[in-house]
Length: 134
Image (cartoon, rainbow, N blue to C red; front, top):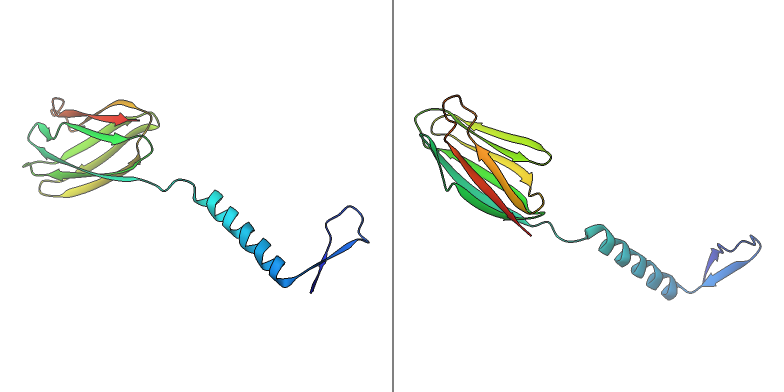
């Protein structure tokens, strides 16, 4: 037997707990903490968007709310390009020189449509839509 001080309001009262009971209680406590701490596993989505002169391909992409999105901007144009996405938490931007790839990571927001575009002056027509599904 293992002597364990009681958590009762009377400090003179103590409890005796068998080692097997103590192990069971410890296991149950750890299991409960693990389940609470883990929650739902993080879902990820990888998206590739190719930038060329004045266009994104594809210009419409999808993700689900809560997913961790890894967006790869592949610049296959002859000049630098950027991709800015307008999210509720603020704009997020990634830029890439000609022939270079760049990655932007963000958590997909609430369902809706979110515009993305190239911020380079003169590239205003280069845009697309991220559709976030529930």
